[in-house]
Image 1 (tube, rainbow, N blue to C red):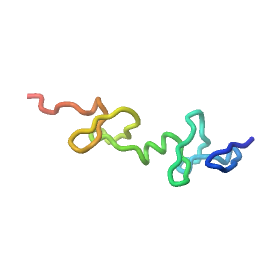
Image 2 (cartoon, rainbow, N blue to C red; image 1 turned 180 degrees about the vertical axis):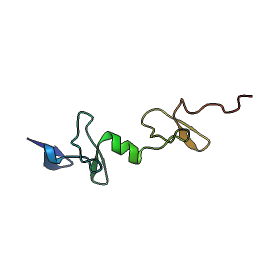
Image 3 (cartoon, helix red, strand yellow; image 1 turned 60 degrees about the vertical axis):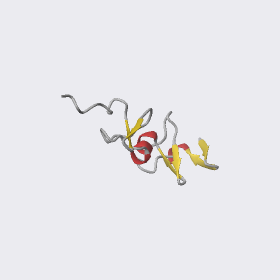
Image 4 (spheres, rainbow, N blue to C red; image 1 turned 120 degrees about the vertical axis):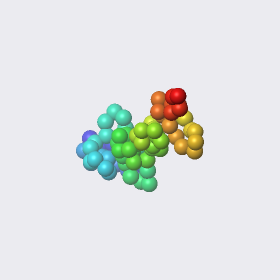
Length: 80
């Protein structure tokens, strides 16, 4: 079996993430600069990072103080 992606044909077992070498599942793939990535590796490498927890931001976020935050990470630190 073959898959067509990025105007090329691949054997399914050859169409893998450039980082982890795993075949793509139901989440599909992400492309950057001609390279294919699984969702996990793409977000780990290229998603903006939360200023609070330093984890990848993959959905809604807040922009404040010149940085990005997960909504749960952007909390008041002045508890006095």
